Length: 257
Image 1 (cartoon, helix red, strand yellow):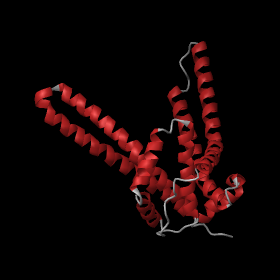
Image 2: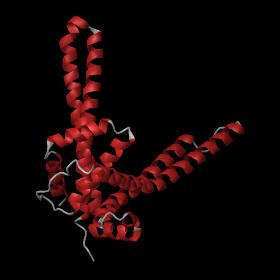
Image 3: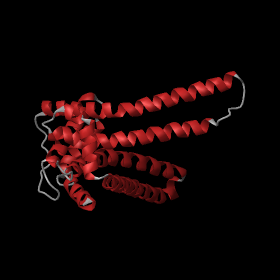
Image 4: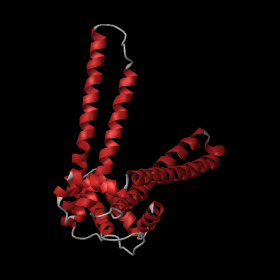
């Protein structure tokens, strides 16, 4: 089942290469408010098609139209993500305050800390990461649940219903899903950067007899520029389409009561 979802999402992501490039341009401009929410709105529409579709179905990619509606859908998605990130922000903030107070107290009494500050830092980061993973998983069920309920934002925060859906799909299945997703995406990123690194290294070797150290600097610059272009124009849009459809198809494997 998980492999079928990944296969479907991979094929779906590259269904229309022009869409990847359009999203890539928006991704480059995503530091601006409007493009950011348009990207989020497109993610919303990808998930909506997935919720109403099926694995290995002939579902189309969303069209770039009705920009105002897509902008509002992006705001909805942003609000859901933001609210689900609040527990992580609270835990990290409290941990940081505790660390600062402990450090100030240690400095004030001019005494070696009885508890290594490194352990506190590791603890804060570890707990914050665990909290983030839990609520990120819940948000990835909340979003398709909201979309499946006519875009009602209230449906994204029916925690009991969200947890029931997660249990219906299966905790173990979700662990498999996210483990596979992380391995897949890390593999794609690593392969891409290795590819451009090899090209940059090859350029450096070709130019090194005549340009010396300048050639290696040029190859490093070349690798940085080309890998950044690939990240924004191809990888970011691919990941967005892949994840949007994947969480929808996972949501569809639930058992309705």
